[in-house]
Length: 512
Image (tube, rainbow, N blue to C red; front, side, top):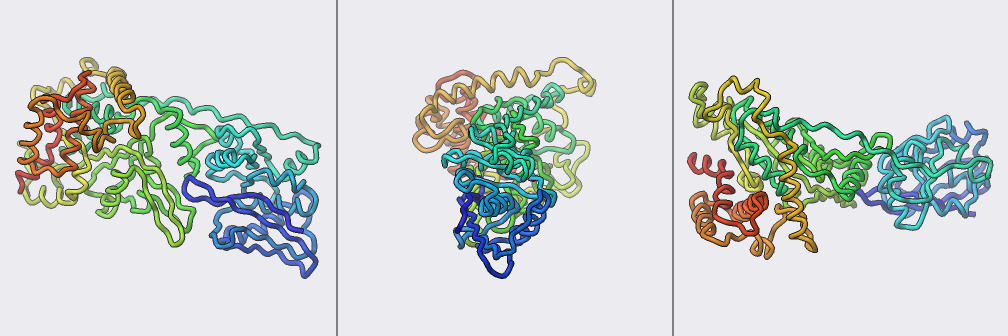
């Protein structure tokens, strides 16, 4: 007789059904696992043997054959432990085979019979709901699984609890969803003195979902500005929270099953590899990279030219498609990657190009070689690139210690929220949410200036040799500026301001 138990394999944030087939028959005592199982699964027979022994059961002195079907699919991970043990217990009559077949089962076993937590339980629970099945997982994963809305979740702490539940001597209750993590206090914009142009650019970026490149001397406040962007963005919607939490679950970053309303902000070090940025790992169990962990949030790259060229260039496609496709032999894994790219850099290697007091001693070669690390295609994908100076004209050192006169994040966030609401109403029924997604006919319908702004843009495009991508991005930024001002149409002043945030185009043209 063959007993079947349902488990799964991961494919990004999706799951693939795997049948755990158990056959126990007379023969030389053996414990064999087949079906393209990796070393972790091959070792599970020892964990299963010890776990069953710890609850007073021993494997029968027979041939035990475990088949993970489909056989041509590579299986990875310790989460098959619980399914294998459940299948064996069902074959031995310790668990009802007909009832167990109605559950998706995953969990790792410890030698003492405890069921250990595994990553990825949230998308598995949602997959179980879609399949009309219940879920059996570790007690430590119960709060996370409950967020899926599945009403048939069993979360035992050990194998004995699972056996006793089906025997009727113990009752496992439906786990409760974990609480949201406490709201995080974002850094406030009022902590930054001066930098009115940079703050205005940051507001536009938050309002339209645009990408921003900041360049300027060391200590000007570029990193501080970037850290304050999440604080002026609207709160995550319920759908966005679930999307972010699903990715965090796959990555193993959900703590105690608690979701968070905090908008993702990822700031990897410049030693980051391509695999760490886009996602990597062997086989199908590819972990999400920084760009996916920043989904619905911000990816901040400080000291942009110091990143490996391959890492920077790997951002090209995800910035356009809002997703990343990782190809492996026999596997194609897709993760969402709808993030805002914020980058900061110095104008040259020493950082003081054009500074009247700390002039760069190797200009212009120092600046040319340093800026050339940022390719034209990558620069094109930044909607705004602004210069962040040490001090603006009229700024005094005494203002650094002043606590008044600076607008806080709360006021800016209100304007950004209104702009988001305008865009939400405008694009209702379309597959975009913010102005950064404007393209094709929608771009023509909503972002083309109604006055001589079109002539201003065309003249600037010729002068700065803007590509079509850069041309369209200027229109999108202008549309966001118009939304912030409450204007239904894009006008020349909106175009002029949008063009003023293309400063790197000007500097590169001057260098040429």
